[in-house]
Image 1 (cartoon, helix red, strand yellow):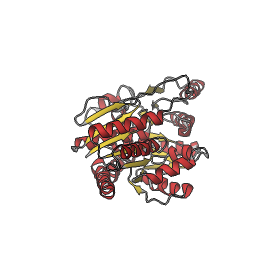
Image 2 (cartoon, helix red, strand yellow):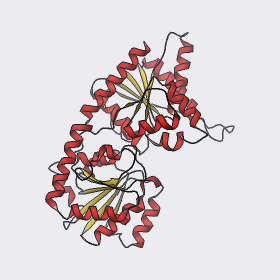
Image 3 (cartoon, helix red, strand yellow):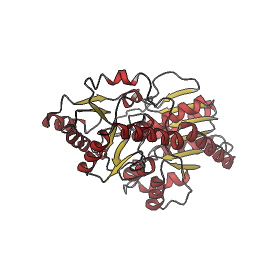
Image 4 (cartoon, one colour):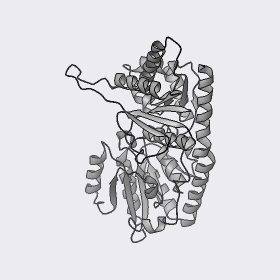
Length: 381
């Protein structure tokens, strides 16, 4: 198949999933065309069957806000026609599904109704829970979802919330996020790399996100502070975003500068995850929790909040722990309990890895997308 993929190319879950999906599909022989305003962050090396088409947004004095959605629609249509794409797959409803709808209509008009370009929309979370629920965007979000030739959601939680809040009549298929377990794993070099962060055998905790307020970065620091007062520990903060400055000041106020490392955005996060003992993900909301899954594949249990799709990923007490939002005391206690028992920690890590392999491995999830594409194409023909 020849598939056009559009996503936000920045450091966030939807962009990561879309990019990894394209890479996996390309390895299975499909021709993948990424269409976006910038090259996706994880598309950092040339790959067979992968093409990138930049959307050029003109800045005219007339426009206070350049109309990216219109430029995207035009580019989608151009790429689809030039490269004979079979379908478009857009990640994040707003504005990508609206642009795909316009591209479909333009191609149909140009071909006299002979060409119909199907498009699939994957809902990731904040396109529904924040942006789409805004009264200004709700009608167009609902319309674009209903006009999609196929709709998927990354968790049962997100599917049910979309159906309820938007009164969607279309069927929405749940296809969970995935992880490549051949890449995300502990390897024989992990012990040596660990010495960089744990020179004296300290426990290593980690948080990975885009540092938005919903990730509750201050709670990460508060939990770690309680842990490091009882056992020697280091904290790796991977990512960047609007809450970084606040977290840096909190770290300084607590005198943790020597124990907390801000690593910024990382291309090969699996190498960092594989040297850690425990992930902290105290988010206010997660529609799935991709960071937790990537950690689990590296045999790293996760302490997370009992919200959104996280209970679909983490089995409380077996592959990680769940707590209520803001309950830093419980999270710290859970962290200390598991970090203080090496045998239990490693066993939980092995169970986390097993769950990632059995339920969320790319080799299991990618065929679900391929089957979904085929069904969409059959209905559209």
